[in-house]
Length: 453
Image (cartoon, rainbow, N blue to C red; front, side, top):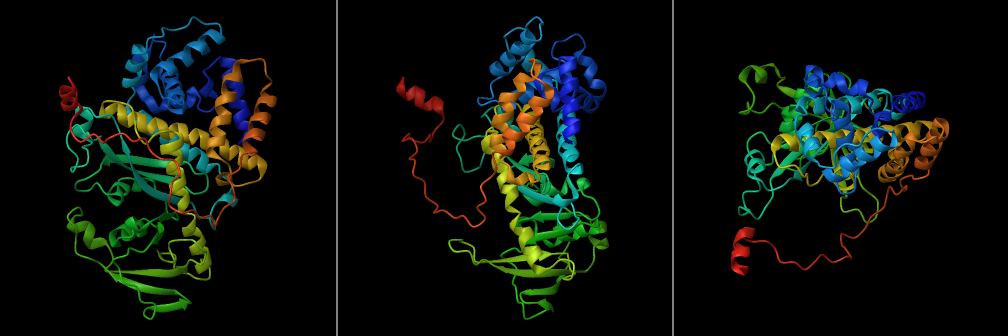
């Protein structure tokens, strides 16, 4: 992995490519576009340059188009070429013409490549574990965005923001996003488990899906098992649990059978018929003994039935690592500022969402290389520390600095920023810093302006 990184850096420097070419080369970008790349012939904003500038915008502190174009101008001057115009119109036009399929494919390719190259020791008992979780993102309040992603019904028009629900599938080994989707926040088939069903094509036989209780429905587990995919999820609070029944496997560990419910509206009768009438599942009760934790007991449901191979302790420790999905989403939404996107049309919103995933996966790629070299797990390295270090090192690619020195110093610097080992850390749910004392917007802004005028 480290050797391939050095070769990519040498090739980017030799070809005089933009900074991000060392992380995502043009050879990896063009196949995602297919024949669409010919539309850019003769432009300065070729598919590769548009993607590289877009990535720079996603990783910049202010996410502005002006800053992204200024970065391109600085690179052109640094390599002895004529600078482009500082006006952002051409860049925005080129970014608007990016096909959504190309952005989706780049997000998938960058994430899966790192996962496939992960050492076997990073996997859980030899399985590829997929950590699934969902969240929401907001976007500018425009008519086009409201039509595609309506705001919460309880909010008045002009007082809220369009909101989209997202579901991401993370690699537990490398932390990268293997696939993701977004849809409306409310309505039929807009729940997290419904969105996840649209990503089932990613799954392979022998995978293990790790998720919270939103994905613990009978049909969610049955459809995964039909594909040869195992599940480790938290049991839904509405289901009763009685460890005096079923086949006992050990203390707080038994096998139970769940009957097939009636056919739901979203499933055809033929699909319902081929599913088994009973699901044999394993329930493991995990008692939380750490002082200060709010949750004292967790019931984990899994299709991994053999206690000799998958002990109750191993199941409990695996479910505890589900929290990494929350941390990954925090890195995306807070560190990369994806919680509120900036584009004003749905097409651009979707492209901005997937390009954030590409940028996130590239950061994870560098973290994986650092972890492999340092002999640690990638989740033990700081994501924000990697982003900050890489942001300072990328502009040095086109200097006379040796590639060996550049790579060695970069990876050594990233390795010195580990995540604190705080497995039993707890904090009171209180904040010290007070928010600004602004009044809330309860009516459309135009009405307030008329009132002031």
